[in-house]
Image (cartoon, rainbow, N blue to C red; front, side, top):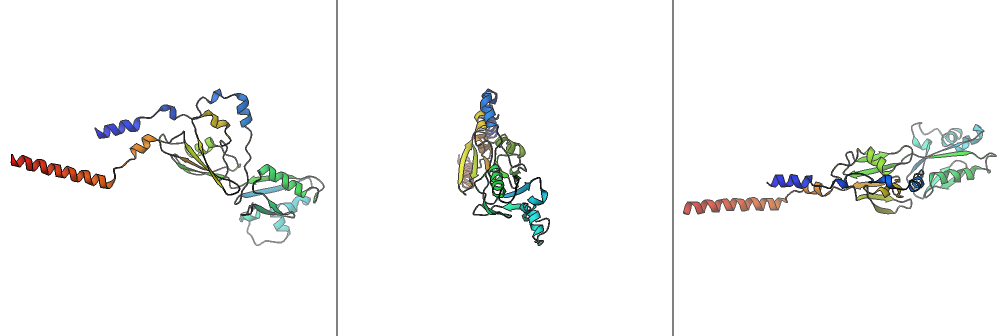
Amino acid sequence: MIALLAAILVGCGSTKEIPYVIDAGQLPADVLAAASRNHDPVLMPGDLVQINVSGPDADAVKPFNKSEYISTTGNQSMSNQDNSIYYYLIDNAGDIEFPMVGKVHASGMTVTELQDHIAGQIYPRYLTVKPGVEVRLQNFRVYTVGEFSSPGVVRAPNGRLNVLEAIAQSGDLTIQGRRDNIMLIRTNSDGSRVVKTLNLNDPKLLVSPDFNLQQNDILYVEPNASRARSSWQMPPGVSFGLTLLGTLMSITTFVVTLTK
């Protein structure tokens, strides 16, 4: 009877808590259009970025591309497999050392803002034609923890990832995962942390500023009530006490039966 009752309790759960972004089709089209713009990640200390400078004169822009700069300055101590030849590590102060230009403060800027800033540092000081600057974030990743089918590290080579994409790449939530109270732990570019709550049932998630994730975000999905009940175990002390009580009751019954 106890096992049957436990099975019924585990099976009880509102189906309304399972779907994602319920009635999302009822969101106004103009609201969705405004929220569908590409998200530009904000750079922070510890990020690896690749910066390529291009222009009509290939020789003129060579000194501003890191691998070419290392080659022309005669520094051959690093192997071709060393990421430092191609990528810039944003240091704890939020800076990178850019060829010819020197120290550039990158932390707190978006990728687009850094592109424009570097182009402004190069032209017209060093070049007669404004160059093209492309910045790519190389270490964009988020972490999924808790009631995911495959929790772990989710990487985004293009530097962009939203909540539903992270869930999909983690094998979706388990049926026991709570969808209305997902914890988002975010580290800001200044090192501070914030904790937010996401509701996957709510269609407004699609237009929320937190729908697009930042690098190093952590998504934690807690178990729902049925999962918590199914995983409950009786404390060892209580189990021992009940066993002892049952034994004493059996002995008492046996003794009473013999004395009649």
